[in-house]
Length: 152
Image (cartoon, rainbow, N blue to C red):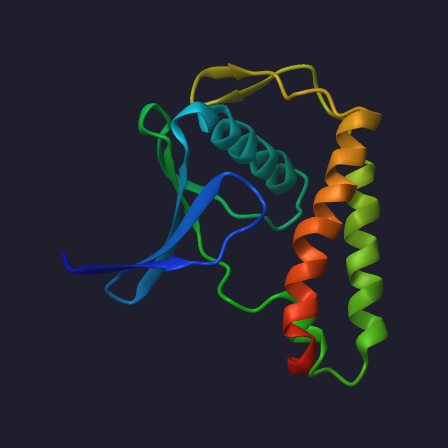
């Protein structure tokens, strides 16, 4: 089987992302630094929680947590911002987005989850973590958007 691998832009984490093309199908490989393998387990668990609550998130295709790599479904290159900028009724899409956020907030988290027969306990999300995430948003995403500003 022939396949192609191409590095793609990632997020503000310690992960690297690669698009894999096998025949006509694509998936995304995610690699984490050696000391950040738990990050992949948390990432996979959160996506599983979202999917089980009927919120679209990448699904786990395969994993090798010992080698710090997972393969997930590919949602493509189009960001929400890029998609919405071409729509006439933008408000409709923002309302859908708000509905999804509300749905996420209503999820009742359990103490433990199971991922491939592994008992997973998600890290606590407290005020300090929230502040770190907000800072990350401004340090990473807003800089990214400001670079693309001329395109929008």
